[in-house]
Image 1 (cartoon, helix red, strand yellow):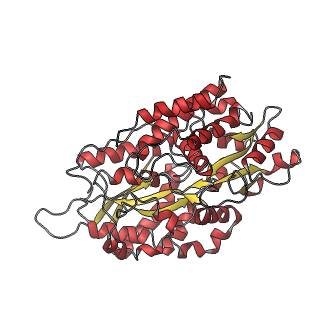
Image 2 (cartoon, rainbow, N blue to C red):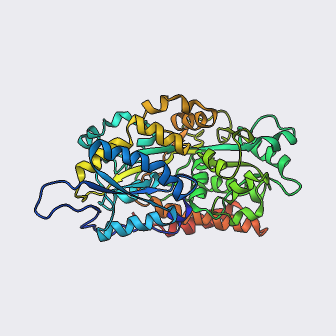
Length: 438
């Protein structure tokens, strides 16, 4: 999800014990008529530097869709801090949009509500076919073995961004490729009030993204094959400790970063206070912070050793935005036409260029714009070394409880309290106890 949507996922624990009887359908038709309404309501997620930027990007495309189909799309750009709550309310009240954006990590949790249209073979055929989309993006659209609950719209991946001037001033010629090198490089850059690496220690989603990747590198997952929480394995404990140790032991993250949750580390990066950040699709964000493209470089996120790849060399979760349709929309045909339009090759190129993300549509990725160095790293990561977060109904609870455990461990590190294997395991055990029993 773009720019780490902590407020949306971390503050709310999804509970779908309710059976959703009525949901979706912001548009209404004529009573007793089979005629489809000529309007759609669309909740778009905040992808740009502001809500106004999103409106400027999206409205011309919505006007284009209306001109082609006669269907007006009523746009609302919803801040990430509100989006999940708004969706949950819509699933129970029936007062929701026809079409909406969702963070791809929410797909399985929202799928379990029964509120969203399932994208079976017939529905995918209506938008050009499932095989139009890259496999990594499809892997974050719902529970494996079930029809997807959403369609990929924007794809993102993590990378290591570095400040070229700070590297040059320190005599560092190349960005680090392993965690050992990152710690060594970070120590060279952590002096005179500057720090080697930025982090968002109070950002629960970002915490999860980083420790999930590190767990993969340690040969671990946070869930068993049958979907049970498995937070205290040796690999999961080692992953969390390694991440927090960047502050506690390696001293390359400023203690104040333990309180960061709202892109403050990017602001420090733009102000030459921090030399490196691990972030997803950050070029548009850096521009909004006043940085020129020639001021920063980008490289694949680190691995333990060797080169990035799937398995133990996974170096990113599959980040991104999916597009979903409320099942009970009164304009199902119009909604599918709109999804087809937004995921068409033409629109995929336009929209992903605007947002600095990667098109999940295969053909659109061939546009030369996505060969630019900053985007090519992300595209290649998604194709070769990114893995989807666990696609289980309890995924958002996982983000909340484990993300909080990491937050508390960062607070310990910032306060000078010891972060040990035992203390990490205790925090993860407490998190696991908060998960629903399978």
